[in-house]
Image 1 (spheres, rainbow, N blue to C red):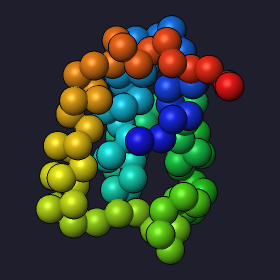
Image 2 (image 1 turned 120 degrees about the vertical axis):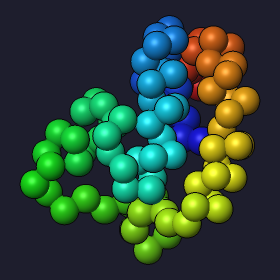
Image 3 (image 1 turned 90 degrees about the vertical axis):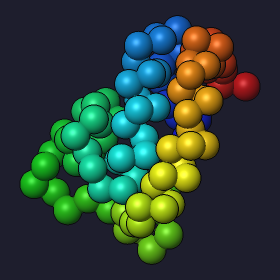
Image 4 (image 1 turned 90 degrees about the horizontal axis):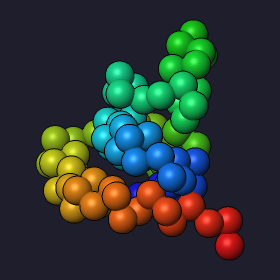
Length: 90
């Protein structure tokens, strides 16, 4: 999980929930749920977007991988209320 979304949404349950929902699709190249605050592709659709933190700077692929990542993220998304106050810079 990308902890920047927790830090940037500290105290904002809805914002954190939306960002966590968008995280996996975003990493697979689907930016429909991404917010401009977090996604360069949404802010500037004409730029060629690369994933700087992913292998070979390419979007992830594969239905099995996406399905497994969705399973892993489900309990995290379900407990978003407990995560919203973890945005410490310490």
